[in-house]
Image (tube, rainbow, N blue to C red; front, top):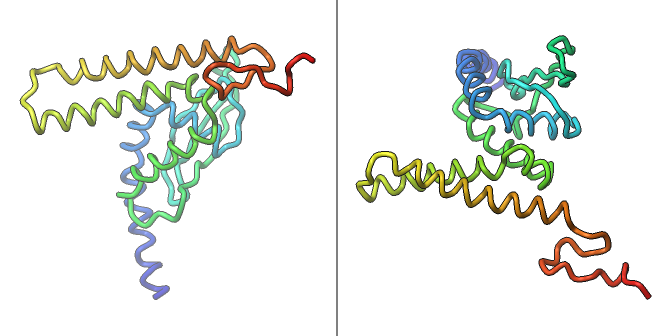
Length: 191
């Protein structure tokens, strides 16, 4: 009934209020690239130099504060809400929503944004942590081997990202970017 929903509303608001400082601290310390992607995608701001941090959590979404970097610390601050993908019913959904929003935002912002803001390195770090955790459950690994897996994955992603960036930067005009052999595009071929 409507009365039951209204009674649950303060409980959700209270849960989010209690969780907000911990979640904001975690997002600001460990997921600044996600916050930047939220700003670009959900806030509609072009790729540029911004300082962005999470300040609060509401039933609507993540409350972000940001300012354009202008070489000073006096640039005006602005606020926006990065909306959750659907109505939240429990504070336990925040992590799931954050991961979904992260993926959606980075996909929407394109490869150059992902390269510039460390998306692939971050993905490798998270993947290696999962692999390391899975291996520890199955095999007794020596201490510190998780770092080795992370370092190898990060190095591989870094090499691939640098290669892709160089390739994009050196592509001659008139060539088809999706063709790995850079075959001349017939529309641009000379006569």
